[in-house]
Amino acid sequence: MTDTSIPATRPANARFSSGPCAKIPGFTLNHLSDAALGRSHRAAVGKAKLLAAIEGTREILGIPADYRIGIVPASDTGAYEMAMWTMLGARPVEMVAWESFGAGWVTDAIKQLKLDARVHEAPYGQIVDMAALDYDRDVCFTWNGTTSGVRMPDGDAIPAERGGLTLCDATSAAFAMDLPWDKLDVTTFSWQKVLGGEGAHGILILSPRAVERLESYTPAWPLPKIFRLTKGGKLIEGIFKGETINTPSMMAVEDYLVALDWARSVGGLKGLIARADANAQAVHDFVAANDWIANLAEDPATASTTSVCLKFTDTRIKDGAAFAKAVAKRLEKEGVALDIGAYRDAPAGLRIWCGSTVETSDVAALMPWVAHAFHAEIAAQ
Image (cartoon, rainbow, N blue to C red; front, top):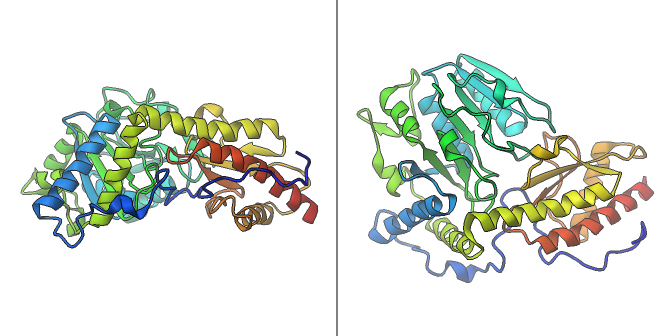
């Protein structure tokens, strides 16, 4: 393909947004025909569907039987805030951030909760040395930096024997990366990421150690009703059986159940990870073949396989931010890639969602269009 040629193939699905993410392949609204609409979530049918969502999550992710799984309000943000506000403060805290959402948790810990905290930060494209942390403190971190394209390569740095709790925001990692449950005491994510579910609901996963903290520690600050996980010093077990704190969308619950069924059909967690890996590899191969673009992640071992972030490196580019926006706008106008501009707080560039619901053939079809848009914008400067 010459610099000015129009690619012959177009992605069948141009949705590469990093949240809400692409629906499962072949999705139609008919998939939701069994939703318990107009029924109480406290009725038998509602409770059964919510419990099925919890147990399906446990099954596919391989979550230990003694871990609690709850459906909570306000997406991953609500789930992680709930964990911070109910469990932190018992010990000093290590706050870890290498992208904007991790930085948001730092702000909450320092400015809102006013915790005894040490902050460990790395710039976009890099990662904090997790082995250097004090795990006798509580540790708050993201597994995959959705806005930086940098992820934890594994959980080896987290000791099996630790005094503190590990609180992991895994919202763009769950269902696409192998999470070591024995190293994670609190894990949160949202339905709207790797499985392409509808928004507004979060998942909160607690290890036995996290439950022990909840039942033995009372924070110094007042807790709003929506954050309360205990009553009379005991865990409210109903939350972890589908008795949600507030009214859930039964349409969104049905959508998640459909996505879980699809996950089973592609081989469960192993199949989901393989799909995301193949998608990311299609982008990485393209980057390796073109010297004007690079992965924002500096170390390939920490490069995300879901939120793949790219930067333009060509010296002819006069205004990096304007150039990246123009490329993204051109791709959207062509109808080949929607919502792939870098996150507003991140360095200028592109962010291509490569999660498990995306087809590798669509990623492969997109990449020549990225080249086309790049060369067209270079010519237009």
